Image 1 (cartoon, rainbow, N blue to C red):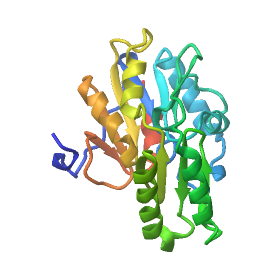
Image 2: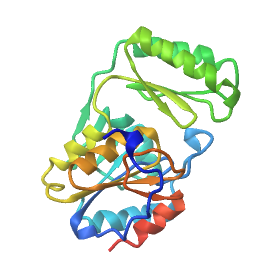
Image 3: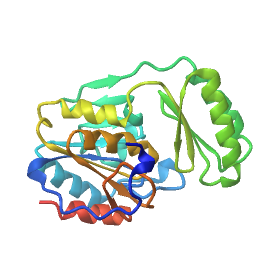
Image 4: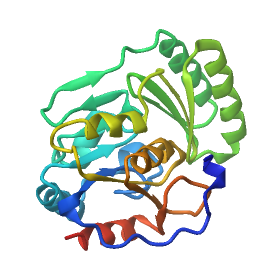
Length: 249
């Protein structure tokens, strides 16, 4: 079934049962409000305490699956989460702390240079080099959005990089694992095996994760604005997501 075929009106999920679940969480727009600049997202005591409790209650079956770099995840979450899929799955740290990284695409350097040249047009355009991908943020320069999308599509065609649309961001990434692949890899690990997977996220980049948890008998939770999605449930905001997680038992 296509994403477009799913209902737009999503009910809120029932309280999460920690004993039977494996939990996968996006970061920006899910665990933390989206900020104007990526570096503006900071550690938060409430979120850190919540993740510590969830980690214990889930018996380690907790992973953060995000477009952020691994360094950023550890900075924002204060190093509390071992299992992390970063850069949309291109970098994955498993539950033993072992890193799995996709080789960087040779066209990435060209894309970084081209996007930096484009960003010189406006101080509100931010280029984020993630090592195996590069993102052009235009949240603070929205008038440049249409042209940014044109440039990103041209670069994807010329370099062979994968274009990934996001919320006020265009990202060019090395071909390789996505968020759904990351969920599958974690679920194959002994610590996760047999649990019901739940994925919470807000962006189009999370759709692969929603689809994979449903394939494995779990469900997705869309955070934020209602739209066509593979998620089965929805919550209105980061605050609602945090409150739902705090009620988990």
